[in-house]
Structures are given as structure tokens and as C-alpha cells.
Image (cartoon, rainbow over all chains, first blue to last red; front, side):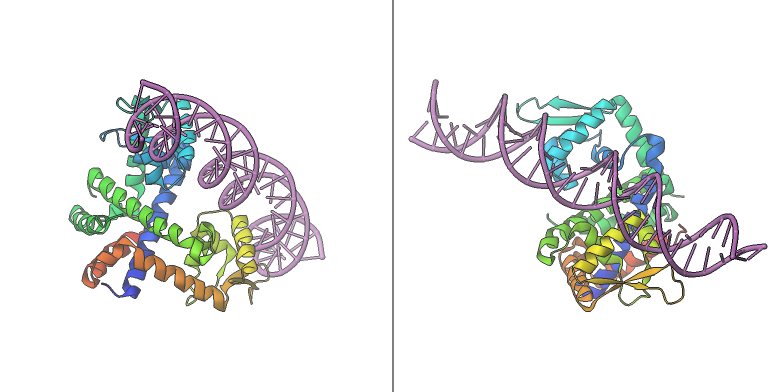
Amino acid sequence: MPSSDITAHTLDQVVQLAARITGVMRDGLEELDLTEPLANLLWILDPAAAPLPLRKLALRLHCDPSNISQLSVQLEDKGLGQRRPHPEDGRVRTLVLTERGVEVRTQLLDLVAARSPLSVLGDAEQHRLQAMLAKALATPR
Amino acid sequence: MPSSDITAHTLDQVVQLAARITGVMRDGLEELDLTEPLANLLWILDPAAAPLPLRKLALRLHCDPSNISQLSVQLEDKGLGQRRPHPEDGRVRTLVLTERGVEVRTQLLDLVAARSPLSVLGDAEQHRLQAMLAKALATPR
DNA sequence: GACTTTTACTTGAGAAAGTCATGTAAGCTC
DNA sequence: GAGCTTACATGACTTTCTCAAGTAAAAGTC
């Protein structure tokens, strides 16, 4: 159990860093023709992972499911995503990226990675950083 | 210059961690009678530091100055903050926490610190973490 | 196997938060 | 001190989000 002061400072740093990262993202949104909420959704739509039900996406983004519905419509209108019926459960719909969606998502991640303050850390440092972050993220809930 | 894949993963972790932290904060908002934007403002109002002009607060929160004006009114209505004229520049107003404001801010920080996933890291680990985060945050802009 | 309950999503209304344009007042420049 | 810039306030408007209600499918109950 760390002293509360120490954690407070670490917290502050993480929050600041996150603010910087979202700042970088926001600056790149226009050139990708995205809004911030759409970019956030795109961010968590990993094309390599199994497609997620809308409900799970809402949990991940800490928002109401109806919000995801609306964002999904926007993604579809832009030709970046598509809602597909779940093969086993007729109530469920999963959100999948189109080819173009994957492309734009890659551009988004690359853009942020290139301009993020984390890029000043070398490979070795990042690995050590990742280990610590993973430990923190491994805590339940 | 790190490989882009590595940075992408680190980014993902930082973003996830930040989401967890804001999630913890959101869960605590009701018991503190705060809204999320007010809590964000409260967060950056360090009573130990020199009082900041509203304009600087807008820069820190990456939002329009008019937004800070409105939030300042809310803070004042709640008796947590007070806008003071700048002693040297008549155009400028600084936002200062009241005694109660400092109290509530402390409660907010303590609450988040106690429930944040970072608390699983020991003192030594946090120090190493802080060093790396500081290096990243030291990059200009 | 029909009946109720639960779960997943959609829809539309409404609230909240943020931006933009405009106005006012104070400093700065010459 | 005339003109320009900067800092904040105000009001109209947009965007985003939530909440309540509705539909449809699955699961549980008898």
C-alpha cells in the first residue's frame, strides 16, 4: 500500500499524459474527418479481436448503450463500420469495421503514436513502462 | 525512436488506465455533489500553486475560455470557488478555491487515489513510473 | 408449449456541455 | 489619445449524451 501522496502525484501525471494524448488526437481529427466520440469508438474497435456487441462497447466507453447505437449509425453513414446480427443470439448486434474503417483507424492510431509524448521513450523504457501499467490494469474491475 | 507498434501498445495502456481513473472519479461524483466538468476543473485548481487566470485554465482543459467562465459561475454558486481580479492586470481574473473548495478537492483526490488501480503499485515502483512519465511529459507542447 | 421475465438494441425527447460570435473593458503601441 | 490587442462575459446555437419507452429475441417458469 503506497503512501497516498505518492499515488496522488502519479495519478496527476497519468491524467496529464492522457490529456496530452487526447489533445494530439483532437488536433488530428479534422484531417481524418472524424469527431472525437467517433474516434474514441474507432479506437476500441480492434479489427484483430472478435467483434463486440454494442452493449460491451458501451461498457468500455462508460456510456449509455443508446449512445453507441447513434454513433454506430454515424460510423455506417461514413462507410467505416457495419452492424451485424450476432450468429447465435438474435438480440445482439456486433459492430464491425469495413475495409475503409480499418484503414482510417490505422491512420488514427499511427497519427497519435507519432505525435504522442510517449515517443520520446526508447523501446527498453517502454517495455518497463508497459510492465507496470499492465500490473495496474490487471486489477479487477 | 521507438517502434510504432510498441508505442501503440503503450498508448493503449495509458488510455485504458486513464479511462479507469475517470471511471473511478465518475463513480464518486454523486457523493461529492459534483459534475464531471466541475470535478475536472477542481482537479487542476491546486491551492498550493499561484492562482491561474481563466484563460490558462481553458488551455489546460483544452476548451473554450467561455466554457471556463460558465464553470466558474457554477463553482461560485456552490461556494467552492471565487473569481478574483488580478492585482496587476485589470482584464484578468483568477479562480481561487474557497476553504470548502479546498476541502472538497481534497476529498475528490483522496477518493480517486484510494480506488485507482495505481494503488496496487508499491512506492518504489511508483517512483520509477513517475520518472518515466515525467520524461514523457517534459517534451514541449 | 404458452406465459412471464430478462436482455439487447432502437428511437425520440430532453438535458447538459461545449463552441462560436459578439460585446465590454482594460492594457499596449505609437 | 487613437487604434489595436487581450481577457473575460453573455447569448444563441450545436453537439453529445442520457433517460424513458418501445420492439424483439432469448431464458426461465409452470
